[in-house]
Length: 373
Image (cartoon, rainbow, N blue to C red; front, side):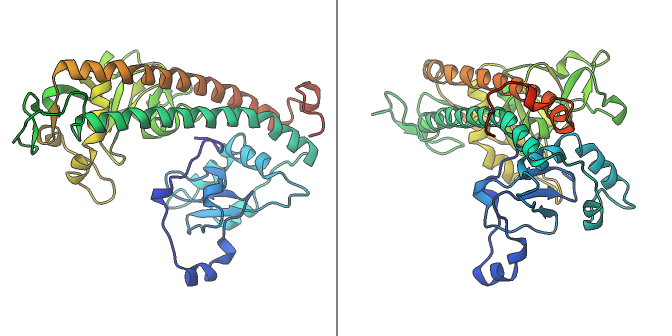
């Protein structure tokens, strides 16, 4: 995930009271600050502080980088650290004795070649439209998925579907459900195929992208490992529209939308028998609290296959499922189209980024209407 793609979910933020906040003023996030992860699996990942976290505080795993705005554009530095300089930061972090981490001394002594401020600003102005389009697509995808999710919940969780008036509810394993509905376990409705156990020697620079949880959340990036897949069974190959279920760490269902790829372990590709992939996607997310209740593990939560037999679903008649499909399928098709556009934008931006930051491409000669920047 790149600096401009990193998002913060407000519901996942921890909070402190006013007295604690006063003691932590020096780590208060301000506009233009760069947030750099200095330890853990995401070491060396950074972002420019988004508006929703300005005024918040960082913990010991995140370092604040604050620039002199007269000499350095934080947008330029953030992109430089997430692009051409990231591999150098990762190399420093990996050189530690016990675990990957960056110290204050590491970051303070890290050398970056700073071009004139005017060059930095022009570079940011050139890349910003890519980021704006990517963010706009993300919001549209989020709205479309939210609309379909609300419709699914209204019809198939609260049973307020067209024509529900007067339909008698009967007792079932899930409580009262409409009389002409059925109850089935997820293991009855689909095959759940676990991804391939890739080893470090499989992680190459060429071939199909290897999909991990990181790619589910942030899409395919320049840091995504690749493999040709010639010696891997076809069941581990996925493409746009595949329903993926992250059964370890991040319990959630996704629809893949970044083209042909290979599936890593800890992820199921879901292959429905009698319901559509779209219905299965929303069904899984609608019952995710039941899966989470069965999750095991202290450091990394996961579910066992037995949970797929234990968690059940109320299945409506095919006529009602078809009605839902006619409304929700066009929404999904548009989501996939927007996701493909986003992937193209990311690839174009990430191709330009190192050449712009290094000065290999001179923005003053590109003629892109940036006069006055």
